[in-house]
Image (cartoon, rainbow, N blue to C red; front, top):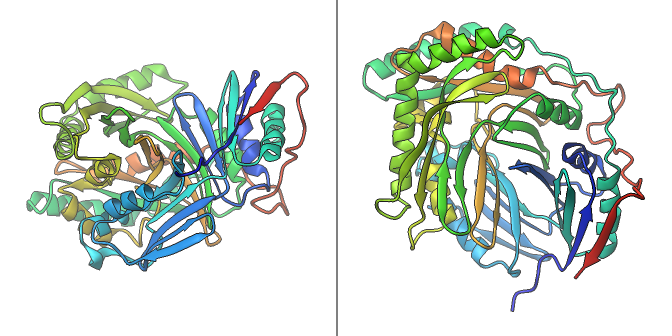
Length: 465
């Protein structure tokens, strides 16, 4: 019989700022790898890697504790990933990780579009800590470590000295992006495709404190999901406006496409309301949203029970940080012969980060962007052995890798798009992050440890096994 992944559990009852608590855990040097994932008022810190699964051009590299294996590059990466998880030597695992946008090229059988790099990286953490405002639950295989981490969660005092700065995102790459938009519009009018999301990159020329940036950015945003991760040199903090795929353990399937955008001015509600009225009546924006929802429903029908796919909350306006979007929810019931990774394969990448049809959009993206997207436009996800899956679309994110820091944003281009408006839309989206960049203290390495050992006498917690 498979053994338990987390034999010990510790429950805390206390008033906690969960955002600060996971920030302190992220600063701790206890774990070299971690993922923070926020969903529905709970921030989960997944620390360390008891198991690890990585897909690159060589295939899947898998490690379960001290067992390692290599599988050749598969024809169907999502199905191969599900098979690997089905062979787990533990029966209560939880999984956290990310998929690159280019995972879609592999899934679609388009190897000519691939570039060297990681396509998927997931960990089964050594510890899993769920934090809410009224307490926390810590799970792991080391009783003493859980007690230490409970003290970190309980202390949870925020460094208020960090001050964000704002990056002028409109000063980089405007002409090149406008040219790309015009070219894609020409392809759309020539009936080569219906829609494509082409993005641009804005470099950040100064070192940032990623954890402090995550805290500041989360306080200034209203995301569907947020995340902070550090996995083998890739670090990111993001405020996702939508989910790619949600699958409950009971088989409910949801995807929440957002398409159609206007700026949101927190200090000028009259202006925001005027832009909202323009958004819901603009034929270009309404068309862009409607075709995106239609495709999401068609994709869900391939993995859901016949007759169960429908749309809820069609085309309502959803506020996300510095922008407001048209939003809908496509819902269905998972077919009996399908699993959560079938849903992910059907819906990934989100139509709102790729285009219609997707294969034609991939080629437009590859032609007009300067390099592989990697995590941008991909997904950060969590899943478990009971069949649940939750995946956040990676937009509104600051990225760090190989000594670089950058922002990236795109716009949905359709036949009626104009280069100036689509460029401005990328600026509006990037400002959700660009306003909250916290410079690193001089001489401070990016993974500097914070004091995570202080305890709170007012907190009560017990460990059970």
